[in-house]
Image 1 (cartoon, one colour):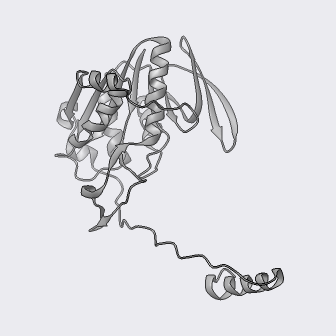
Image 2 (cartoon, rainbow, N blue to C red):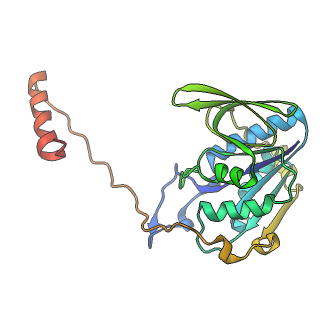
Image 3 (cartoon, rainbow, N blue to C red):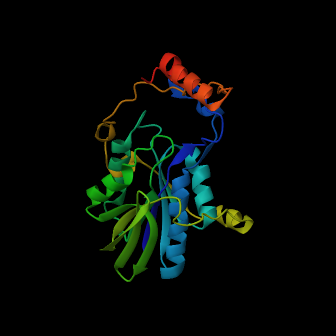
Length: 257
């Protein structure tokens, strides 16, 4: 089985983020594998171990993303591909990424493509479904279980607290979310093996596409941090007094009605 995982490198939202000149200050940011993509990598490993085959992790980004690709290899992926756009694309979007991936997969023999449900930085959730449409294969988003029997695929999908069961067939693209599995930590032997696993680096010229073909279709107007949360206010007195004060605060300060 030919399994591919779409992996994005994102800044760690658990760490402090600074914005400078309307951009996230990458010098002070810690970059990690997009957490939802970790579920995709783990699921790819489990499916390969069960059905055989090979896992290729694909990233569109800069040479700095090699660290995250090596982590994916240490988790258990077989090989990685970095499509380096830092010299050709100044600022991309989902359209840019999909056009590049479409060219990459043009002559690939694909059985299964896995991706994260969303990326925690932009959270568009567009790349997976749009790529599947370009490749003319079925796709299912926000999956919580994946079962493959030959060419037949059964997927459980989260639908706002309920479960929808979908049957389809290979090739298929799925996007993964929390609850699908528990991503493993890279082991020391895995980290050592990852250093010898193949990591191919491509540029868009290698995919026979021009810079003008991958120019973004959207533009970011402004990036800013949310305002700091103000301290809460504790209401004193009896219940009726607290209710009266709360109504006044909502009217005069919060202006909710």
